[in-house]
Image (cartoon, rainbow, N blue to C red; front, side, top):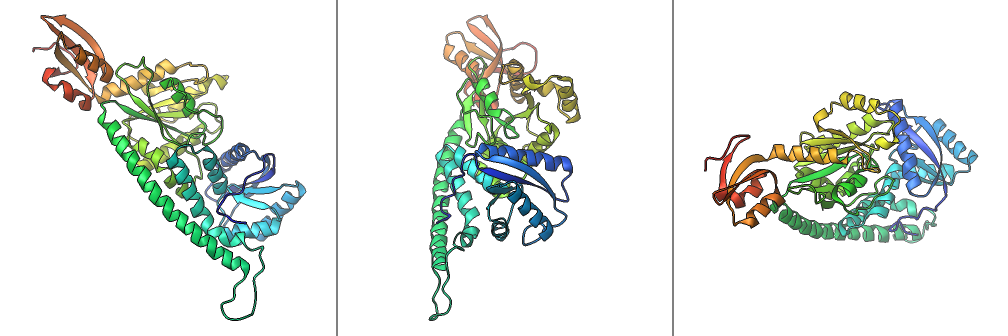
Length: 439
């Protein structure tokens, strides 16, 4: 046995879910994270049982809970004939070992469940490397637990060790070596990605990032906005890799959107660090498209969790279009308007959308156009009538408002970002929001 490879979960295996409510959590937050755990284990093919709602007044070293509560949970696992016990919180290696000894069942925590989902959904080389690195770091302190089933020699000459102790050291050295290799490989891949990003940033096209809570429909929206075939699945963390696509051809002037990993409550910091590649795209984006699941029972909590992560990234004040998705699942839309007002969403930057039916998509494109136009200057260019290449360039890289022909010159009024306007500097007449050129 070795923990260098994660165990494969058996499809259909029963899992007793334990929802942990810490002192700082209210009952609604606890219920929401418990519901998330239910979706997470379903994504792995488990048959969830429960959950058991367990209030944690203070953490204990042995089981996280007190002995009485621990035996109560163990008895429930026995009563329901659960094959696994899954905790909606993080367990230390010793606590995990103690629980398995108490319940005589396989016990995992929220972090291990998320890690396995990440491993299944990673597609690019970088994402796979990041997942494996996070797994190695998670399992390193748990190596001793993997070999407790082996006998250990006692007595004998000095230096004699049991079979388990020898294997632990071999595994430990192997894991540490692999961690060093993964870090080296990641540095190379990230350097290559930084080069590609630099080239993309050099192209005068506005950049946006789709953000939101996991399973809010970000990839579905990305697919319809960009007319692309990005992966879509109705399950948590279906998207891990940063996927960048150009907005649909009918979007004049062009812009690119990047789909990012969904946010979630109780996501361990080590896992956030493992996916800086997708979050870096958010930091570099000129505008954000914040997708919210309008059908969620905890819409406010999801909105707050996403905003909190954006604040941590330092981009909460970035121009933002808020999209309430899945309105096709609503019987009454009045509540969504009330929720938007309650959350402080700017009605001039808010859209109600169904990525499934296509309703509201044009509104999203209009809002994105407004945001881009606000970030660029309205400029008038006097272009020679025979320079069709420059006129085409303006249409590709700006938002053309009007064209007027006179005396062998085409006067073009357009919103153009500064980085795109450099090529046309010699033909610029004025920068304004009205009036005619005097050139």
